[in-house]
Image (cartoon, rainbow, N blue to C red; front, side):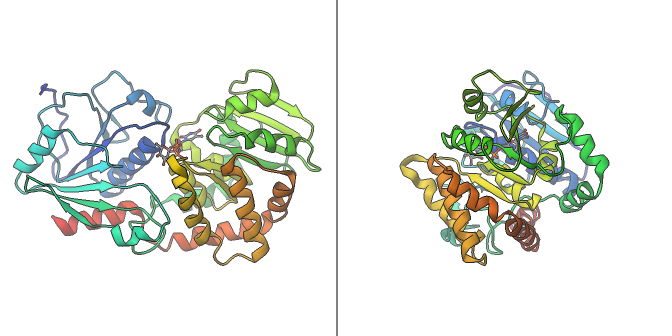
Length: 389
Ligand code: TRH
């Protein structure tokens, strides 16, 4: 094992190690970075965030220098997780995000430490019923005196909850009440605020043939649509529709549709994009959760899995999200979301969905309020780990 210098951890602060392997996209590091910042800011925990791909991390946090082995941003110690990791005493909690495999040498050090750390595997988010039964289950290590606990985010009191910073809803309220905050956000995007009578939409998705369908429907719509597309995987399909390359700052008018290309904003500013829009297309896990806290109508492009496993997960969420909606509204949501996730949407599906936006706006607000009654994930995780020390 290589020897690296260790930054001093302030005295009297619990140390946690959070391991994050970037599979693809931004979701794994997006969740870990958010968790690490919240544990630091709200619980004064000294977090060492081990990341195997700092280059993918950089768009979310531009202060990151991908070649630096140890650096601090927002009070979090970020460590480049290389093959050989330094000899270091494990923290009192070790979080293995999304089943990433912690190095064997580190596990051996965990087994040697006295008392042993609380070892938690933070799982992916799902609204499926089995999650409640698996949340906090334990699994003893086959050889070493260590136990790993499975911690599941979720939408009910019997799960680990969702990431939600203490001041998040107050910040959203402030943004909504303050034209100055909104103007500041638009300056950051490089675009002026769209006129008030325009339907403003953010579009964050995986590659999806339905993007072309929707842009063409919006182009011919009877009322104007402003579509904000961050530089990301979906942009190639927007470029195809526009038949030209696009970059941040570009604007294209096509009939009733104005397309605006946004830079990929740092994670800290992503909420403001969701708050500024009337409708948000989101994907994966973290943007999906943030869209719910934004309390605006949304459309979820779920992370596609082999053998369509994601379809079950999509329907499990739709079942709880649409539970107390009027039948016609629920039908419009289900049809549109299914179309979006199977790669084709029609003008009929869009018109039906758009006709229910006022009800969906109300629903999104009450959905966010009721979710906020639940303990947030960081608090639940801290409480759980303290109970195991
Ligand atoms: O990038 P994703 O597709 O991540 C996915 C999912 O997490 C999926 O469950 C996982 O299995 C897979 O990765 C490996 O979508 P997600 O989860 O929404 O993460 C995107 C992050 O990017 C989120 O933290 C919001 C952030 N973001 C910005 O910071 N700035 C931006 O401009 C945009 C558009 C997003």
